[in-house]
Length: 225
Image (cartoon, rainbow, N blue to C red):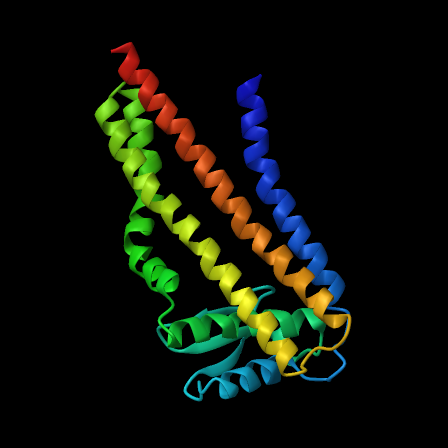
């Protein structure tokens, strides 16, 4: 029964976070900001104010596909946010510019996360294969190697949290201080960013729970020996 509850939580936590961000985004994507600025204009203005004239702002297909690409120095906004004038679009645009500012300032957690990408990718791709092999062949050594690979992927998830929270904090500072949002719009923009942050928290929580489960499995396997 406890295993059923555990796996139910693994499904419910990320699903709830995704539903929360979508419902919050949908709500405030229908609320126009008082300045009439598009997401592209918000992003461009904040970039210029921070001396990031070399960072481009481009539209990209898809919904909630917004991101900052540190390799090409481009803030990409979903077309809805790029061309739209909503509170949600302004908040998301400012958040992605927050990552560009982190990149400019060599924000330590962002640099650490970039360094972890190759290791985290290996961990994501091979950890479960090694863990499954360890379980099937009752090999504590294989299980341990799989756990180490998984730990790298989990570390990446954990490092992502301060990176995302910091980008949101920078976003709120920028759009409030420059008057891009006014009065109760600040509370609405914060709700959008907080809901988005929940997805990262949920992913990290699930990753940590999975890692702990396999660590306990490894301890039990060693005790049996």
